View (spheres, rainbow, N blue to C red):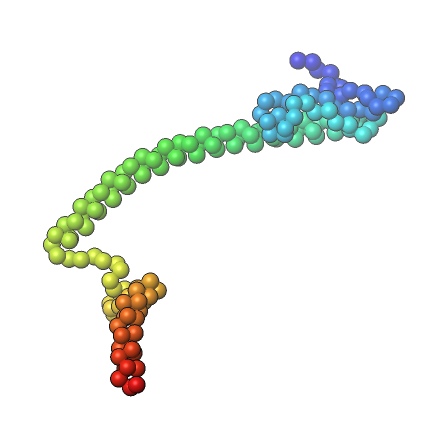
Length: 158
Protein backbone atom coordinates (compact mmCIF):
# COMPACT_ATOMS: atom_id res chain seq x y z
CA UNK A 1 0.00 0.00 0.00
CA UNK A 2 1.37 3.34 -0.94
CA UNK A 3 1.91 6.05 1.63
CA UNK A 4 1.70 8.96 -0.78
CA UNK A 5 0.13 12.10 0.60
CA UNK A 6 -1.69 12.72 -2.66
CA UNK A 7 -3.23 9.24 -2.87
CA UNK A 8 -6.47 9.21 -4.94
CA UNK A 9 -5.79 12.82 -6.01
CA UNK A 10 -5.48 13.63 -9.71
CA UNK A 11 -4.85 16.96 -11.43
CA UNK A 12 -7.40 17.66 -14.14
CA UNK A 13 -9.13 20.54 -15.75
CA UNK A 14 -8.28 22.84 -18.61
CA UNK A 15 -4.80 23.63 -17.36
CA UNK A 16 -4.47 20.52 -15.20
CA UNK A 17 -4.56 22.66 -12.09
CA UNK A 18 -7.77 21.47 -10.33
CA UNK A 19 -7.61 18.49 -7.99
CA UNK A 20 -10.03 15.62 -8.43
CA UNK A 21 -10.55 12.55 -6.27
CA UNK A 22 -10.50 9.29 -8.20
CA UNK A 23 -11.09 6.01 -6.36
CA UNK A 24 -12.56 2.59 -7.08
CA UNK A 25 -15.36 1.69 -4.67
CA UNK A 26 -15.81 -1.64 -2.93
CA UNK A 27 -18.65 -3.91 -4.04
CA UNK A 28 -20.80 -2.98 -1.05
CA UNK A 29 -20.23 0.73 -1.55
CA UNK A 30 -20.86 0.53 -5.29
CA UNK A 31 -24.10 -1.40 -4.77
CA UNK A 32 -25.22 1.26 -2.30
CA UNK A 33 -24.13 4.32 -4.28
CA UNK A 34 -24.84 2.93 -7.74
CA UNK A 35 -21.46 3.48 -9.40
CA UNK A 36 -18.03 1.80 -9.35
CA UNK A 37 -15.70 4.82 -9.29
CA UNK A 38 -15.61 8.18 -7.64
CA UNK A 39 -14.40 10.90 -10.01
CA UNK A 40 -15.26 14.16 -8.36
CA UNK A 41 -13.79 17.64 -8.54
CA UNK A 42 -12.51 18.97 -5.25
CA UNK A 43 -12.79 22.47 -6.73
CA UNK A 44 -9.40 23.63 -5.51
CA UNK A 45 -5.90 24.17 -6.77
CA UNK A 46 -4.37 24.00 -3.30
CA UNK A 47 -2.98 20.60 -2.32
CA UNK A 48 -3.68 20.96 1.43
CA UNK A 49 -7.34 21.85 0.84
CA UNK A 50 -7.64 18.97 -1.64
CA UNK A 51 -6.19 16.56 0.95
CA UNK A 52 -8.68 17.77 3.58
CA UNK A 53 -11.62 17.38 1.18
CA UNK A 54 -10.34 13.94 0.09
CA UNK A 55 -10.06 12.80 3.71
CA UNK A 56 -13.65 13.95 4.37
CA UNK A 57 -14.93 11.97 1.36
CA UNK A 58 -12.93 8.88 2.37
CA UNK A 59 -14.27 9.07 5.93
CA UNK A 60 -17.81 9.31 4.52
CA UNK A 61 -17.14 6.20 2.44
CA UNK A 62 -15.84 4.40 5.54
CA UNK A 63 -19.00 5.39 7.40
CA UNK A 64 -21.08 3.96 4.56
CA UNK A 65 -19.11 0.71 4.76
CA UNK A 66 -19.65 0.51 8.52
CA UNK A 67 -23.37 1.18 8.15
CA UNK A 68 -23.66 -1.49 5.47
CA UNK A 69 -21.81 -3.96 7.71
CA UNK A 70 -24.19 -3.15 10.58
CA UNK A 71 -27.14 -3.53 8.25
CA UNK A 72 -25.87 -6.94 7.10
CA UNK A 73 -25.49 -8.00 10.74
CA UNK A 74 -28.97 -6.66 11.46
CA UNK A 75 -30.50 -8.63 8.56
CA UNK A 76 -28.73 -11.75 9.82
CA UNK A 77 -30.23 -11.13 13.25
CA UNK A 78 -33.66 -10.65 11.66
CA UNK A 79 -33.28 -13.94 9.78
CA UNK A 80 -32.46 -15.65 13.08
CA UNK A 81 -35.52 -14.05 14.66
CA UNK A 82 -37.67 -15.26 11.76
CA UNK A 83 -36.38 -18.79 12.28
CA UNK A 84 -37.25 -18.54 15.98
CA UNK A 85 -40.66 -17.08 15.12
CA UNK A 86 -41.38 -20.00 12.80
CA UNK A 87 -40.58 -22.38 15.67
CA UNK A 88 -42.87 -20.38 17.95
CA UNK A 89 -45.54 -20.42 15.25
CA UNK A 90 -45.35 -24.21 15.09
CA UNK A 91 -45.74 -24.33 18.87
CA UNK A 92 -48.69 -21.92 18.70
CA UNK A 93 -50.33 -24.17 16.09
CA UNK A 94 -50.04 -27.00 18.56
CA UNK A 95 -51.66 -24.71 21.15
CA UNK A 96 -54.47 -23.90 18.69
CA UNK A 97 -55.06 -27.61 18.15
CA UNK A 98 -55.33 -28.08 21.90
CA UNK A 99 -57.82 -25.20 22.21
CA UNK A 100 -59.85 -26.71 19.34
CA UNK A 101 -60.01 -29.92 21.33
CA UNK A 102 -61.21 -27.95 24.36
CA UNK A 103 -63.95 -26.30 22.31
CA UNK A 104 -65.08 -29.72 21.06
CA UNK A 105 -65.25 -30.95 24.67
CA UNK A 106 -67.33 -27.93 25.67
CA UNK A 107 -69.73 -28.61 22.80
CA UNK A 108 -69.99 -32.25 23.80
CA UNK A 109 -70.80 -31.21 27.37
CA UNK A 110 -73.59 -28.96 26.11
CA UNK A 111 -71.99 -25.59 26.70
CA UNK A 112 -72.17 -23.36 23.69
CA UNK A 113 -69.61 -20.70 22.98
CA UNK A 114 -71.19 -18.74 20.13
CA UNK A 115 -69.90 -15.23 19.91
CA UNK A 116 -72.50 -14.26 17.32
CA UNK A 117 -75.55 -14.98 19.48
CA UNK A 118 -75.17 -12.57 22.37
CA UNK A 119 -72.88 -9.72 23.32
CA UNK A 120 -72.34 -9.23 27.02
CA UNK A 121 -71.42 -5.97 28.73
CA UNK A 122 -70.98 -6.08 32.50
CA UNK A 123 -72.98 -9.32 32.61
CA UNK A 124 -75.98 -7.66 30.92
CA UNK A 125 -77.02 -9.69 27.92
CA UNK A 126 -77.73 -7.56 24.88
CA UNK A 127 -79.10 -9.25 21.78
CA UNK A 128 -77.14 -8.93 18.60
CA UNK A 129 -78.42 -6.33 16.17
CA UNK A 130 -79.48 -7.81 12.84
CA UNK A 131 -77.33 -7.17 9.83
CA UNK A 132 -78.60 -5.46 6.68
CA UNK A 133 -78.77 -8.74 4.74
CA UNK A 134 -80.90 -10.35 7.45
CA UNK A 135 -83.37 -7.44 7.42
CA UNK A 136 -83.63 -7.47 3.62
CA UNK A 137 -84.22 -11.23 3.52
CA UNK A 138 -87.03 -10.96 6.12
CA UNK A 139 -88.70 -8.12 4.20
CA UNK A 140 -88.40 -10.09 0.96
CA UNK A 141 -90.12 -13.06 2.59
CA UNK A 142 -93.13 -10.89 3.69
CA UNK A 143 -93.57 -8.89 0.46
CA UNK A 144 -95.56 -11.57 -1.48
CA UNK A 145 -97.95 -12.07 1.44
CA UNK A 146 -98.52 -8.30 1.74
CA UNK A 147 -99.21 -8.05 -2.00
CA UNK A 148 -101.83 -10.83 -1.77
CA UNK A 149 -103.60 -9.11 1.17
CA UNK A 150 -103.59 -5.73 -0.61
CA UNK A 151 -105.10 -7.20 -3.79
CA UNK A 152 -107.82 -8.97 -1.75
CA UNK A 153 -108.54 -5.72 0.09
CA UNK A 154 -108.83 -3.79 -3.18
CA UNK A 155 -111.10 -6.49 -4.67
CA UNK A 156 -113.39 -6.47 -1.62
CA UNK A 157 -113.67 -2.69 -1.62
CA UNK A 158 -114.48 -2.43 -5.35
